[in-house]
Amino acid sequence: MLDFRNYIILDYDLKRLSPELIFLTGQPVCEIVRKSMIKVSQGKSLKDLILQHRLTHIVKIIDVAGTNITLTKFVKKPFTLGLKFLDYETFVKLFPEHHEHSLL
Image (tube, rainbow, N blue to C red; front, side, top):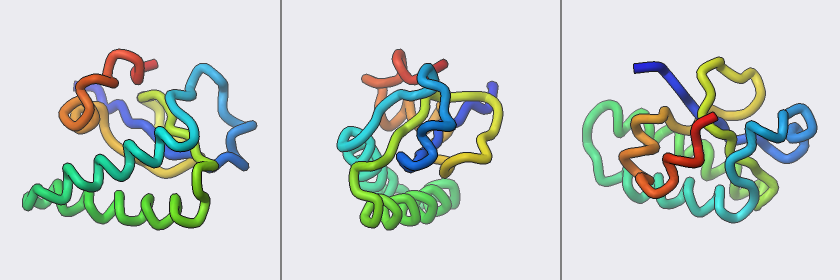
């Protein structure tokens, strides 16, 4: 399986991001991050614990940045811009209703 990932971008970096890479912006991003945190916190595997740690860091950033954030579509190449959010497989497991529109 290809290693597709999506990223959380703060709005001040948004001008450096190509518009076709944008999946969601603002409050919907906050909701997806918080729902992810709730769903992942139920797992006890090492992968879940690592993901919980990453999401905790992202939630802290959202608490500071507010809704001034953007979620990218899934891309194969790594970004130097933004925070790694989820891999495609995990995202589809957590949010099957969004997977059709989230892949570039």
